[in-house]
Image (tube, rainbow, N blue to C red):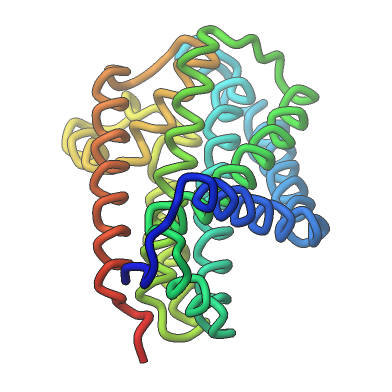
Length: 263
């Protein structure tokens, strides 16, 4: 759905800055609901899977089980929170019908998309940082490759923010925003090598696991932290960037057509 009036650079910058601030303030204002629960949940993962079960598992790929699962748990929190923030925010704007005011303003569609995605990325990275700090109390983590670590977590947050936006566009009721996280995102995350190395699986299941895109993101992030990965790093970058380009194109197309936005 294109804007009715032309946008100028200064106005566009103000619109972007306002949207980013609104989305950032949204999750910071209710931090008890947006930042504390993920921290508590991930702490339980470290205690149960790391301390209790990990002591019985022993070493995995040359690292203690706690060290091995820490990058995956951090990435899991980034994925979940980036996605959830955007889908809930955009659908909330649709439900309350104030998104229509934004769509008829001179704000370009790419600015609208960037504003919502920035909010999702911010919450995802903020939560990831909190979980990383928590992980440091359970495992001795030394970053192996800083550029890979930062770029992978940022690109992943962008990708799942776009996914949340697309889900928000198509959602018609509140139940719809929970379908994808519950039936698609959560299973793929748990089967994405967070708690195990795919080298432990039989050949058939290894091949099947390679069809899971989250596996590539988790392993690329694990490489950045530990220097160990089950898949080639460049393959992960290519996959993530390709999905981001496709997700951006689809999101802009949906906005232009007004899919899910016109009564």
